[in-house]
Length: 427
Image (cartoon, helix red, strand yellow):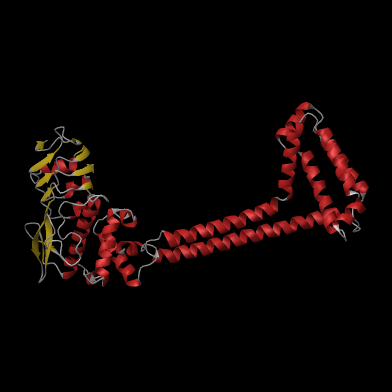
């Protein structure tokens, strides 16, 4: 739906960076691959050169026998030595054996004619038979498992570079496929129009400037992100006016003797509307379980009505500025209204809030510490819920400062498990 469409939004600017990072990764992988190829070619060249004598002739059987004798001499003579070789197959004897095997393979590759013909010419089959006999003698007592193990180790060494190249290619393919899947499948911004994305970024930045935490606004699973996307849709559809925010007009505001904003301009008014609407959208999403609907939710989420124009349980008052006015929320009364979820900390951005009545619902979790910043809060009722923990000291401080005169919770042992040292009433 519309939310899913907008939900594809936070990586467009980020998308270009990811594409650039992916291209850089591909270049690094290609460079690493080329290095492996170069090393392989150099190794093959060294083997080729070691197979030929100084006069360019292929090593004869005398040379082969010398290598074989070196292998036999390198074999451990004691049981302890043989045990050490069994536990560590990378000993010098095995290294010499592998080196000779490589030399013989290099000869088979370098010699003219078919491989079968070359085997006959160099008695390679006799060598294999002889070498197998030598292996049998050196592995007496080690059993068949040692022979199988040595064979596996030899094959791994023999084809190590080839396996490494294949592994790098597989990692490249898997990594690239995974990155494409992530970018195309989980990015909530891929299908956004340019205008929608610009609105998203501007509104998000403005909310952060007003003190909203940044991380929830980047989490598609959060209630805050839901509210941000809803605001983005409304702004793109022309239902929410943010022209002064887009134009970066500086907000102007003064504070009168009662502590209320006054003499403010249109830039301040637009920002205040965005902030207050964001809070209520977040509150609704945070207290609406997927299988549950509020008992009454008249006009909530309606994008053609102001939050102060008939949203159920919301009371506002008007602030007058410099030839402009703005309505702000002063009361939220949603008692016994089927709320399920948690109280979002963003409620603290309703700076003119005086009454928060949430009793008789199924709210859980802790009372947000941020509620202690609501300096105008007079009544906080949250009994008959499933809240837990302790009422924050910041909230109790409001009571001490004579602002908060009514604070009711389940601290008397009701359905919840909450502690309160400053409540006016414990149910």
